[in-house]
Image (cartoon, rainbow, N blue to C red):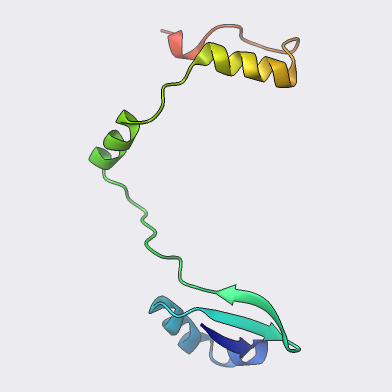
Length: 91
């Protein structure tokens, strides 16, 4: 981790961002006080293959609609509910 001033960041933003892209983390200071951290985002993906999603969904917990509705009613009340049916049972 490196520490640089706000002024250094403004003057060397391209070099700092190149370092961040390479894995470096920076703490930015203003008047001697750390105010921000600039760090790499990691392995962010924009696309997830369908087979990976299907594997994850296969092991996801089952949803109990009746229990979920009862918990919602207990928290919010049931007097303003629009639909009393189970949305997963609709045709």
